[in-house]
Length: 176
Image (cartoon, rainbow, N blue to C red; front, side, top):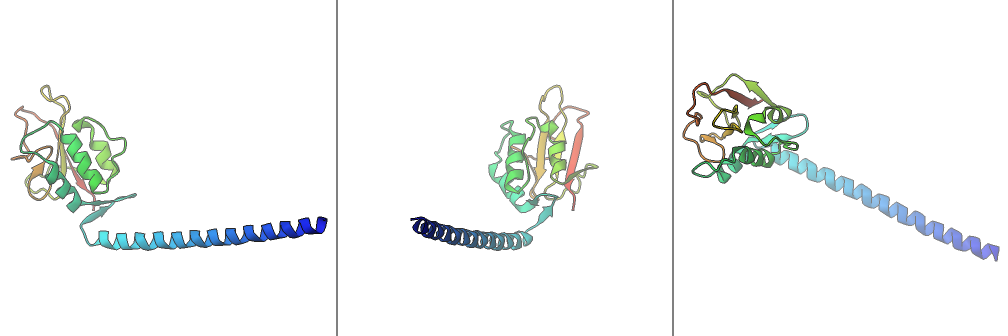
């Protein structure tokens, strides 16, 4: 009887080893497929204008296209939301983003943007500016340059959307 028990146990053990070998083979196949897909995606991304930050690529064409497509003709007072959506579509990490437009500087910097001297006379695609809070604008303002002009929650005629004097601007550009 003990001999039959050992034979059955050995058979079960052999089946478990074969299952383990198959699952390791499946795992190796999955890893190889994932690596191949990643390589293909990387080569696609390298053909478009991207800026590499530590953790992600920001595709400026996707940023511009998305921002233009979701912007209205007139302000809906949702500028930060539109910039967030466009940045996210472009590959930026917008987790833990602020609500107020005037508070977006840190989020831009963690995505590879650098604060520079305002360059309104020579903007580049992907540039973003922030207007600090004013007495008439509690949340401030944020807008991005697409190559076709300044956009926020609407297509702006110019960067100067506030009528108040002494408006303070912060200007950001992706570090290349």
